[in-house]
Length: 330
Picture (spheres, rainbow, N blue to C red):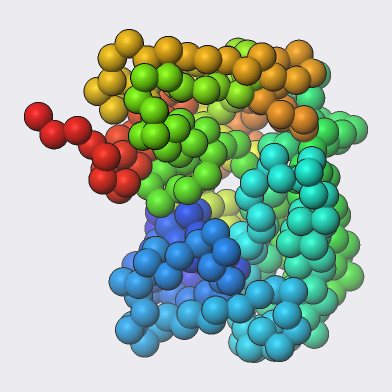
C-alpha cells in the first residue's frame, strides 16, 4: 500500500469517509500526500477519518457532488482524483432507478464538468464494478469481454459513468483509470452480504434468511488488497484510459459465507431459510448470480492478493463482529 510517489501532491477523494474511501485516505495520508475529502455522509461516517481531522495536510468537506456550490470548493489545485462517491446499494435500483441515475451518473458528470476546466488535473481514478459485465458468458471475465450488458440499474450507471470518464479524458487532456471491482470487504463496511447476515443473526440467532437459492457464487477481495492494487495500478498507467479488473482469484457461494459467519459468531443449530430468489435463484432482480474476474492484466504488474475469497470473508466477519460489539465472550 505504498503511495510514496504521491507525496506532497494534492489529491481529492470523493466518498472518502465511506468504507473503501476511508481505507484509501489512510494509505494516502501515511504516504505523505495532501488529501482533500468530500463526502455527504449518507453512507460514510466522519468516524472513519477522524484520526486525520487535525492534520495539516488533510481537509474534509461535508458536501454533495450534486451541489454546484460544494463542487466549487473541492477542485482547485487537485492533481489526482479518486472518485469513489456513489450509492452502493445495488438492490435499490430496481425499486427506484432514479437513485443510481442521479447519485452515480449525474454526480459523475457534474464532477467531470467541473474538473475539465482545471489545469492541475493529471489523473482520474474511478471505482467501477464487475456488474458492468452482467451475466458474462466468459468466466473468469477479462477486461476485453464484450459486449457489456449490465442487468442492474447500478451496473448500467457504472458503465455509463465509465463512458463519460473515457470521453472526458480523451477530450480534456487528463489520464483515467477505471477499476472494475469484485466485492470489496473489510472493516468499516456497512452494506453487503456479510454485514447483512451479521445483523440478521444479531436480531435472531436461531434462523438466517438468505436471499436466493444459496448457490450464488462470487469473488470477494479484502480491502487492503484492493488498496495495494491501486498503488500498483497508478504507477502503470501507460495510455489515456486504462481498465483493470480488481478481485481475488477464486470465488465463494452464499451458503458457505453464511456458514463462516455462523462459525465466527459462535452460534449453534442455525436454520438457513432460503427465499428461493428470482430469475433462477438470484437474490433480487438484477443480481448477477456468478461473478469471477480474470486477474491476468493486474497480476502481470506484479500484484497478487494476500487473501482468497473465503479468507477475506472470514477476516471481515471477525472484524465486523468486533466492531459491532456482538462478539461473544467466553
